[in-house]
Image (cartoon, helix red, strand yellow):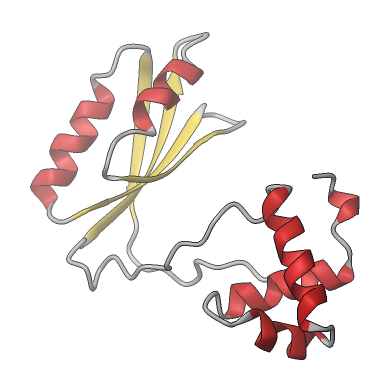
Length: 149
């Protein structure tokens, strides 16, 4: 879907979903000041066009027992970004994996229950074929995880 095909009403519907992903379309319609059928049609269009990709809960990993979260910067050998990223995206401990510009080629956000699982998982990444260098930062505090439009 082209960016220009998402208008102000669509953005307002998306904002409502971001603030309460469990809100009914009727409630969203009231807040956006459109009819329930309009909200439903626009919502369906946003889903069909891939603007809304799905719905997932926002988790507090620490409360779930994941006491270590890391951001790992990965520098790959030439031509190895895609094969490495394809392998990494299937690792259960990885929440997010991106190909990026800058000093690193890939960045990974991961969560671990303890220091031992963190160490073994990071060693697994470091030993992957095609990886030249990794730099890992342990996240000390999270101040924001959601985005406002």
